[in-house]
Length: 353
Image (tube, rainbow, N blue to C red; front, side, top):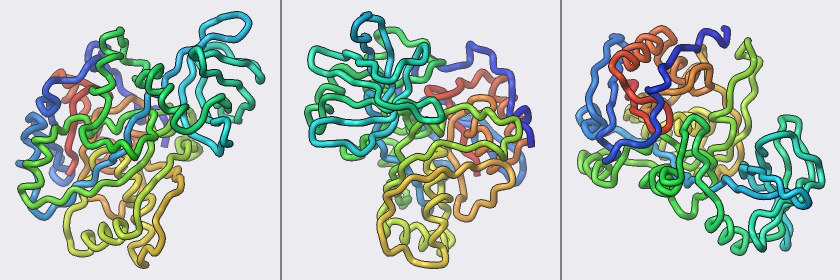
């Protein structure tokens, strides 16, 4: 299975640069995996394709303003730092795994981010990620980050100042929780939901179950191995209670459809919850996973997937191909391009049943 199997040509003008307003007016392609047929509608019509006993699984992780712009001590040169994952820290200093833009920086470099926030590069990991130690911690650190940080929009969004400012709202789901901050990218399938649409879904008797996966670099990073079986994804932290794990397994055994909103919810279901199909969970799960789903993967719990249209050669493209079949995904993507669907993070959606 080669990387080229998941490639396709996308006209650049179909890369969404801003979201549709209101959110639920985005296009929705509904795909039946069994018949290979699909139809186009808008996202606000999603309830028409749901059933009263369905379970909708959403990722409530909140995106942090992880993009920091700073200046190198001594030269004053500009440097961009992207917070990726918090490490064990002391009472005086905060340590993070970070991506750093531009040329490879030297270990020991000190970066000034504001009048009272500095960071020093103290290490480098094998995957080109750097360890940065900041001079603040706890609430002092976070108050500064929320003051100077920007939302980490993907590089294919050519954001001007207005789009960056609006991203504080636009690049966040309406159900993201303040006590679940930790993602460096949005669970983008969830961006289509409004509070009103969620209420309509609940009124049908559909239960909405919240899980947490803090999205890191692994979800959106490029697949680089030509033989995809050799690819390894970065770990991402999952936070889900034992009671919620057992409840989802119970719903599955009752024959209720488990419908994941986004590929991150799929990874929680298949990477964590599926481990407890034959034995009850006794402890809450707070640990990273690095599950890589590609064609040939045997799904145990998933019944349906709501997702966006993904980048060529990405692990997300492989996940949807594993669920719906590579040939059907290629056909539906070609149809979406022909019908001028909008692609990627701010783009349109598909519901794969």
